[in-house]
Length: 222
Image (cartoon, rainbow, N blue to C red; front, side, top):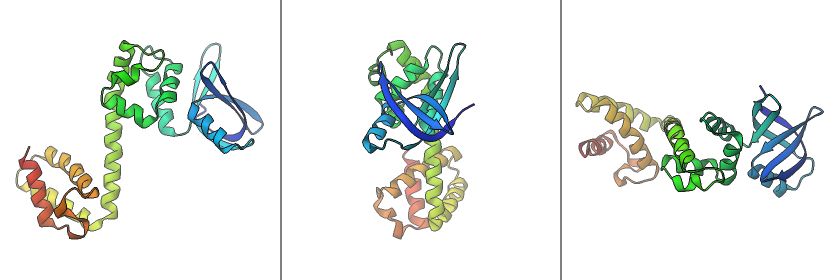
C-alpha cells in the first residue's frame, strides 16, 4: 500500500472540477488527484520545482489504479471514513474536502448541518443523512480524544494544578459524587481555567479549597 509520498512537483492541472498533480519520486512520475487547497499552495509559492509531501489513499480497481493526495493525515483519514459509507465513492469525498476545510466538515457533521453537506454537488438529502449518521459518532469521539490529549498536556505542564486535580478527584469520590460526573466535570473546569472564565480560579491563585468549591458548585447544579 502507498500511503505517503515525498518528491518533486512536475506539474499541476485541473480537469472537470478535479485537481491533479504529477510528482517525480525517484525517477517515477506519480499522477495524483488532490484537493484545491494543495493546488492553491503550489500556485501561491510559484516554485516550479517544489518538493511536495502528501498523504495518500491508493484505490485499486479492476481497470485502474488511483492515488488521492492530501495535505495532512487527518484529511486522508477522514476521506477513508467517507469511502467506508455504503454508496459513497471517491469523487463525493473529494468534493466535500474541496468545498469545506476539515474543521468545517467536522463542525457541520457534529451540528447535524444538513444544509451545508447537501450543498455539495452530487449529494442529495438521503446521502446527507447517511453521511451524518455514519460519521457523527466517529467525529465526536475523535474530538473528545483530541481534547483529552490537550487537557493531559495542559496538566502535565502545570504540575501544581495536576496535583490539585488528583486530590479533587479523590475528595469528590469520598463525598459520593458519581465517578462519571467527576470525569465529565474536569474537562469543563480545565476549559474554564484556560479561558479565564472562573474569576476565582486565576492560574496564580488556584488552590485545592477554591477548586473543590467550584467543582462542587458544578456538580450540585446538575
